[in-house]
View (cartoon, protein in one colour):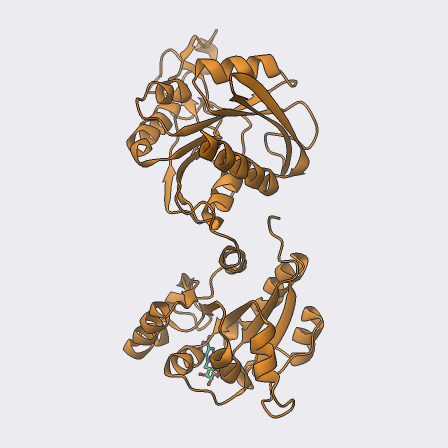
Length: 399
Ligand SMILES: Cc1cc2nc3c(=O)[nH]c(=O)nc-3n(C[C@H](O)[C@H](O)[C@H](O)COP(=O)(O)O)c2cc1C
């Protein structure tokens, strides 16, 4: 299940950083994903957020005092699936690296045997101190995961590395840590979004593709352990964290980047909607409105066709956005472009395809020379992405 933390118990350790107020948004995301959130605060964290509001947002008693409930540190450490310290002060990182256990949070951390994630937040001077850097390196070497900090304007008014990572990034790190890495062996190239074909320096032809489906595939593939290269046309949404992110604008640029990276790939998911025709002539200067009578067009390069000509092409998946569920056209595309699978969706229906957050698709592939069609009902694009990736894995293994 995507974005689900059902039955997962997460200790959230909150420490004395000015960024502590951001924690409510993270707690909400964890709760919305059905996790049980077990809050532990340091005494100094109570200067920044109140235990009462943390307790109410988590729906669980907040623990602060080591001696209030004897053995709470061991009980907590035994039952949790993951320990997240956010925000993590320089103090807690240094203490954890040295094995200090002088309050409930540090003692529980030391007793905890599962995955630990730390999201540091502090002034850049503290972050760059050699002591802290040495301790972060040490903690990474024993398997502690760090998310952030980010570069930017800090609470003290200075600029530098030290901002708490975005709440979405911290949430994604928790999800990723708890997700089985079943695509670890795959190197996946994903294209996403539309392209632009310029008429003159300010006008272009494009389409309604938002990039949401391709970005969802990239996010889930990365979460499941694949090495992900995302080649994206212009989009208005934030790209997910991947191994290699390449921004392109035109169909030719997208083709060049696909060709440059495809030798390494085991899977190629062509989720982008590159524009397939462009103006015959490009005007270097802005075209006078009155002088336009028509815009003659020519075909753009066909990326899937070019990939199909490769000798050792990866497992290739095409996407067909059609007005109506035109399965015959999709099957012809699958054959003509030597695809291993095609994902068809009907863009004429509400809440499906381009721009929507949800989709309903038909997965088409061939087995023993026969077409197989599998309908995936309407659901969020991240769930559709996960189903597509599982199908790719299944068919690729069976090939
Ligand atoms: C207004 C204020 C803001 C602070 N913000 C941070 C911070 O963002 N990160 C940090 O490492 N320390 C920060 N400190 C210092 C910590 O609160 C201090 O090191 C404290 O001992 C941390 O305790 P704890 O790690 O047990 O919560 C701040 C202190 C003050 C007074």
